[in-house]
Image (cartoon, rainbow, N blue to C red; front, side):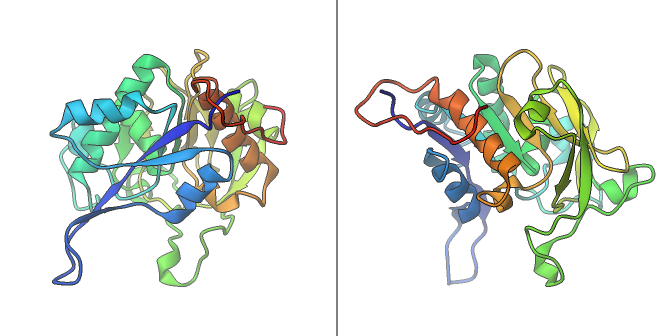
Length: 263
């Protein structure tokens, strides 16, 4: 008997809104519910870049790390000057997520990154990003279908990605062509050491990566949390993550969570 795996989710900074709210840490509900629905116990992680002992103590309790979507990464993290193409950044989140990702990569602790999360994995491994895909990637298609314009929904499938054969992601999704949503303007420019690209958008932009050494370290550029319960491939992805994280869980009286899919 194993307990439900504890999955850490680093938060994001929300600056004060006048006298209405102080500076707070936030995270979207859909990420949390997607993990809970597949058996996880979520642990929202405060951004404590200047308190590594506390951050490390939290990390030691985790069975897996989930890196969610959010604001842009500061180009300083991959050795570039920030231009007007880069949007709002969160230095505390950058520092905490990069630290957690590097610890997890070193320890082979399971990692799943979505949207910004795949970018964090890339930078953690020494890769680099386009500060704006549309402006910097040759022959780029549009990728920034943000829902706040009122014209698009978060679960709108915008374009297909081609998934490479003989990859963990292909085995999980059981499909070589997948229609995905697209809510980002940054993307992978230079691959990270220790990762391989596993899918591409029609314009050649890398849409997902994974570690090829048996470690479950998977990142996708789209937002699969919006398809949970509606798409078998997406549920298989979260099940695979839970399966890997669950293998690290310590014995307890809680029954193990089992997905309905073979992963």
